[in-house]
Length: 231
Image (cartoon, rainbow, N blue to C red; front, side, top):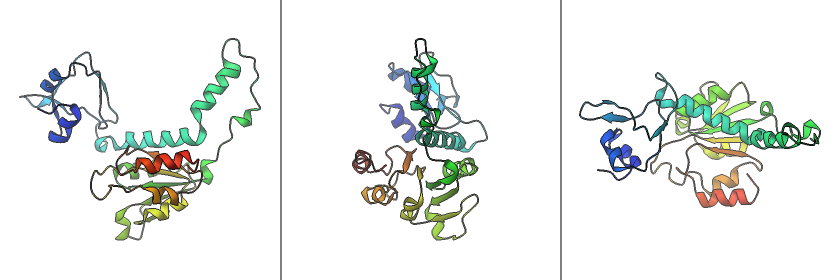
């Protein structure tokens, strides 16, 4: 049998509960879909996890493989990057909201020094299920929503709520203030898709939300871009 849960999912798309017997140290099982692919063989029905394992999943029945919850996570990550919510919360607690605080908070506007979403462009790379869900979710907040997707080569008219889309991702990189990488295809088509040239094309000060993890991303190029302070 596969040695890990990830290998099992990649191999068969679902995980027999019996496989967990070989992983006694497993404590957390994360699923990006709306349900666990665990099955109770030979019945083939969804089965419960052992009490020692916590299941973390998102979405709900009716949502395509949890694409809505994934889009919501990406949107939330963009808000954190732009508004620096965690840092602001920590600063406010330190200067005013904790026992012994000196009530020495700086003028409140200093905590709100961030760019305004209504003046920013969101660029979505990969306009599939997750990307389209993100576009619909973010449209009321951002000034413009644009996307990069191969489908644009065959259809010059972008679907709502996109203002524009292109099969050339560089067009998106050059315009977007926030860039969401939502493609999830592990293939030759996405290998090295976001490389040093992609990062160089992005606007200085742009925010990048990499929902895709390391899929298609040149990690060295990403590291260099961050170290330079460009992104």
